[in-house]
Image 1 (cartoon, one colour):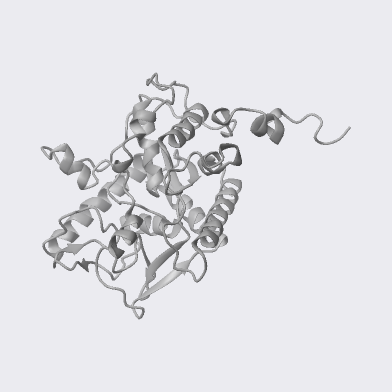
Image 2 (cartoon, rainbow, N blue to C red):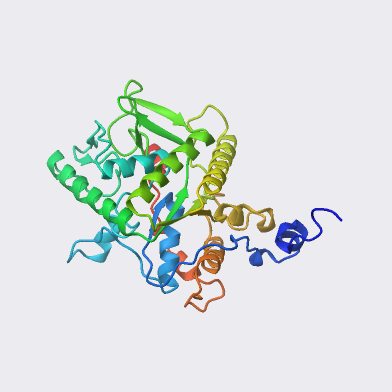
Amino acid sequence: MNPYADLPAERFWRKVVAGVPPFALAPGPSGAFSIAPGARVATAGSCFAQHVSRALTEAGFGRYLAEPAPAGLPPDAAEARQFGTYSARYGNVYTARQLLQLFDRAYGTYRPGLTAWTRPDGRLVDPFRPAIEPAGFADEAALLASQESHLAAVRRMFEDLDVFVYTLGLTEGWEHRADGAVLPVAPGVIGDGFDPERYAFVNARASQVRDDMLAFLDRLFRVNARARVILTVSPVPLIASYADRHVLVSNAYSKAALRVAAEEVVEAEPRAVYFPAYEIVTSTANAARYYADDLRSVTPEGVAHVMRVFLGAFTERAPRAAVPHPLGLEYARAAGVVCDEEAIERSLA
């Protein structure tokens, strides 16, 4: 007798990793809750999080939009202004602190002093969602009106959602020194300019990510006791690192810290579950075949694999698309994925 003798096959690498074809790798959580047809599933996080709502739509589930496009707005204009990119128009929410502050701003318990950034063309952008208006805002009054409407939609989303899927993307970020307001991109990339007296680089520890996520979940469950949460870690590497070391090392730290934090969060909170999107894409079984030539962008086949496992774990409905890689056609629209951090490279061109 030994403690491993009666364990199921999923506990053994040879049986479920080395012993199966790469496309059959399926480490989805067992015993997870089901997402029922008609459930309000809200998504937020890094750019990889956008695939979840698209996959649910493709599989026949409705997409929950708490902040839909105004009536009469042409579809291409709505897409450019990020209506429908996520459940509300908050853009990329890369860090746990960003998510926590989004909740607190929505409920008026946190009012950052930073209100607007000015672009080189004189137009204004919202520092907390700087890419949602390609043309910018004409004045601060228009920006604040849009922000007020947006935060009302965020409140509705948190109170009405059934399932919240959040993809942890980064540990690195920038904050406003005056009050600790966390920003989705560095100042100077999309608006304003970099002033080290006003802005500070931060790189969260795993314990800080954990504490921020648990604080967010406590707030969420207070306004919506029936909510259930799915946490993932983005498999997309950092596009750049401000830490004084090789970006490969920074990326390894960031993903490790996020993964540790996610594990500790779901251990502490039974209403949250971890889904291994990161593990599926980065597994040695796939030998990096799920990354494009830039070794950063996840291929349509990789996304399709992740979402097959996701739908198998959380739904009882098979995808409607009868294609070799279910949902693969949907994800061929790689250009439709919005990543605010890619503005870093564009700003250097």
